[in-house]
Image 1 (cartoon, rainbow, N blue to C red):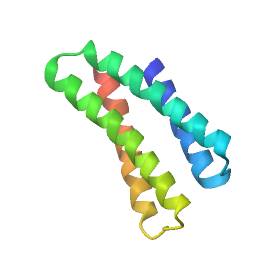
Image 2 (tube, rainbow, N blue to C red):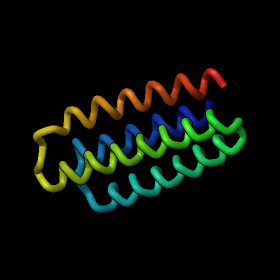
Image 3 (cartoon, rainbow, N blue to C red):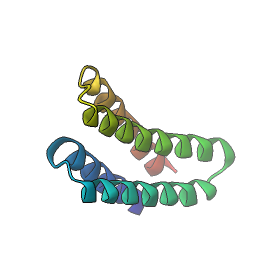
Length: 103
């Protein structure tokens, strides 16, 4: 359950720094919360059996990377396909929540 809360905190911090408040301090906070989220996903996935552990870790990594790609595209003012990245991020989060609650 705490992993889901950490994921939601990372999503809120990530999207608020990307979409609403562009600030260097908040970007550093986004990176720190992303690293903490990845650490929690790594620790959680080590307690699972092999195929499920790999899927959970890859989903967490994909979630973090998609937020960072969206931040990069917003920083470079390349907003052509950012909505597609947001849709994939929402799907990664939904599948990760389902995988966490079913294990």
